[in-house]
Image 1 (cartoon, one colour):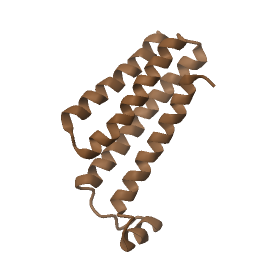
Image 2: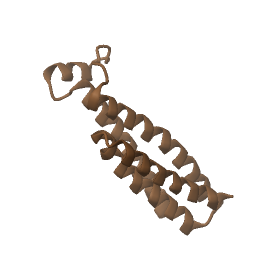
Image 3: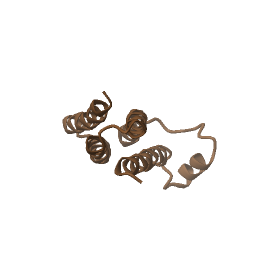
Length: 131
């Protein structure tokens, strides 16, 4: 398996983890009431404020960016695009997204945006290899 495909798999796990974490935080699954909400239909979710709001936004942003990354990286893989450039783009994307999650959860606004821009650079490298 190529490194690009491994990064896609790792990014999928990261995406799933952020969605799960956001759900756990929003429902407050560490409490008895949160367990009831979490294992139920989630009709009585508390408002997504503070950390829960940031976790929801982190999960949504991670999912949105994963879709773009997976599409570009898989297209590059199928097209046989410059493997070194695609791998570098995938690595930059994955590691910056891994850094993005805790920075966003901690609410560090400007650093979060800078890290997001680095992940976009990774996407750009993959796209450039396709063009």
